[in-house]
Image (tube, rainbow, N blue to C red; front, side, top):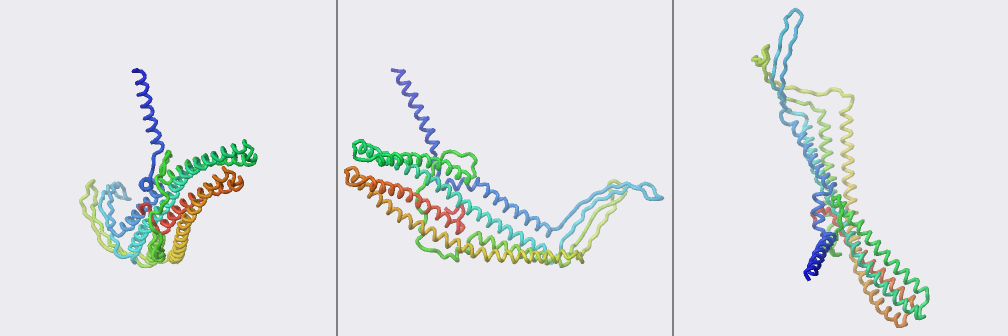
Length: 422
C-alpha cells in the first residue's frame, strides 16, 4: 500500500512539474509589456538616443570657444652663443585669450548646434514612432497566427466530420467516388493549414523579439483582442495634425540650423578680436624669480584665401534653400500620408462589420445545408460550395480584424504616436 501511495505521490509531483513547464512555454505577453521591453532594448532606439547625446556634446564644444582659453607652459633650456659661455634658461607661466568679437560666428554656431539637438530629439521621436509601428505589426501578426491555428483546427474538425458523412453515403451507394476524393483532399488541405499556421507562429515570434531588441527567442503567446483602442468615427483636423508631427518639426528645426550655418559662414568676412594676457617667470635658476607679464588685444582678418570663404557662403546658402524645399515637400507628404492612413483606417473598420455579416450568413447557410445533405435534400456540389464559402469567410473575417489593427497602427504612426502613446 505504501509503495502504491509513493508511486502516486511521485506521479503527481511529475505532473505538477510538467504543468509548470508547459505554462512557462506558453508564457503570455501583453502589448504594454512589449512596449516596456522595446523602450529599454530596441537597438535603433538606443542609437537614436546616443545621437541626441552626441548633439549635446557638439553644442558644448561650440560653447567652449566663447569662454576664456587658458594655457600653461614650462620650459628648460641649456645653450651657448658665439663668444659666450654655456647658460641655462628656465621659464614657466600661463597665457589667456578671450574672444571679444567674431562677427557673431560663434553665437551662430551655438544656435545651429542647439537646433541640431532639437532635430535629433525629433528624430528620436520619429524613430520611436516607426518602432512602435513595426512592433505593433509584429504583435498583431502573432495574435493573428495564434487565432489562425484555432480556426484551422476548427476547419479540420469540420472537414473530418464531412469526410465521415461522405464515407457512409459512399459505402451505402448514395454518393460517387469523386465526392469522397474531394472530401479527402479537403481534409489533407486542413491538416496542411494547421501545420502552416503553427510555422507562422514561430516566424511571428521571431519578428516580435527582433522589434523588442531581444536576441533569445522563446515561445510566447500574444495576449490581446481584435478591438480598437479609440473611437475613430470623427475625422480630425489633418492640417493641425500635420503641423504637430515630429517628422515635420524635425525638418523645420533642420532648416533653422542651416540658416544659422549660413550666418556663421557670412561672419567669416568680419575681423576676429581677442584680448590676450600672460603671466610667468623666467631666469637662469631652476625656479626662476624674474616675473614677466603682458596684456593686449589682437585683431585678425584673412585678406585672401583663394575664394574659399565665398564658396563656403554659396554652399551654405544652397543648403538653406534645400532645407526650405525639404520642409515644403515634407509638409505636403505628411498631409497625404495622414489622408491615406485615415482612409485606410475607415475602410478597414467598415470592412470588419461587412465580413462579420458574411460570416454569420455563411454559418447559417452551412448549418441548414448540412442537414439537407444528410437527408438527401441537397446535392454534394451545392453543399461543398457552401462549406468552402464558410471556410473562406472565417479566414476573411480574421484577416479583416488584423488589417483593422494594422491600419490603426499606421494611423498612430502617421500622427507621430511613439512607444509611449498607449
